[in-house]
Image (cartoon, rainbow over all chains, first blue to last red; front, side, top):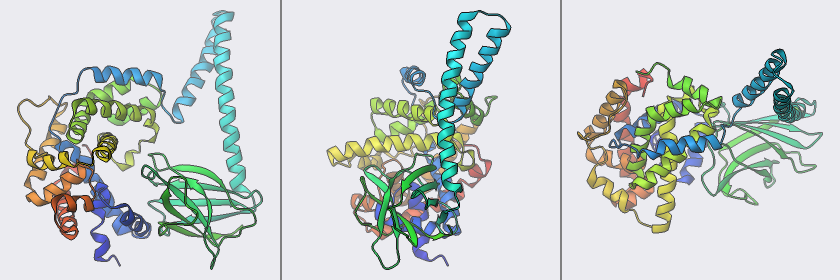
Length: 246
Length: 194
């Protein structure tokens, strides 16, 4: 079961105080050990409170204004805000027409609506491509991490198009100057690089990579490598899984 | 306390509501600034960190996951990460750990003084008191390694070098101290409000 070596690691892991080399090994263990995962979560909760120990200080008054000024320039990322302007634009069209508000305002609203529709269409196209890629009958899958989370990844390999769709869950971004690298492995042969990727702070990402043509791997694995990737893995993989089906 | 939960404000931020951002700042800007200042040590740098952190919060509101903790904890994580990034880049240039060493003598978990900025809400005051007291109650060597990791961003190896102690000793102290904190903060964690 869980030996003493792992038990010591949950606290430094949650504090971010683990040496990088040690961290990769522990993350591989975390994928398989529910006890250590819940241990890590409970220490993360503690770490989330430690900021309260900072001596209280009042921010300079200009910070608030600066934050709000910056916010006006950069709109939030994410799905919600894209839906809202669309609804707002549509509502503007209806209102303008119903009230006979005039040609000009309807024109403005229509332009806004068209722009919103165009960008919705682009997103729909890319979502469709993704769904088509992973629903094909030639698709094989691999689950990286034996018991699910965290972190874990699910791979969909569309053999007809040699495309791999990579879905990452609870995988924190690689440290500065580092990247994640996906490997395809045929038993008894050296790993072949499929490509490098990174995740946003949310730890969730969907990335499309290309499988080297004609290669039929048994396993896939993920390592953390220097930015740009490595010709061969430079450390033990922290996620490994076998290819199924397709 | 305020009528609208933090979580609802984050939802509104996803819709691009700047007033929600202003309200989140009014609730959490003080603690974020305090945390940034405790890590970076300079007021101008702390201001930079807080502005960056709230910019990130604004842009990535959609990524907030309530199942992983409170809005306050999310903000603290983002602020700490930003502050440590700044600290590390500065450290890389200077190759000096003076501040981390100084943190020990100053005592980052010092009790709150009378001149402290007023905080919003009784719950936060309680959280501050309990966290500060829990840290202060730890044996000094355990508190020290946790503070060097949390506020100094040092790895266990770096802490061992800094304190000139064996790595194994640092590991044991960190684990023991964190376990005590987990025990003494259990009530706060179960409440889910921090």
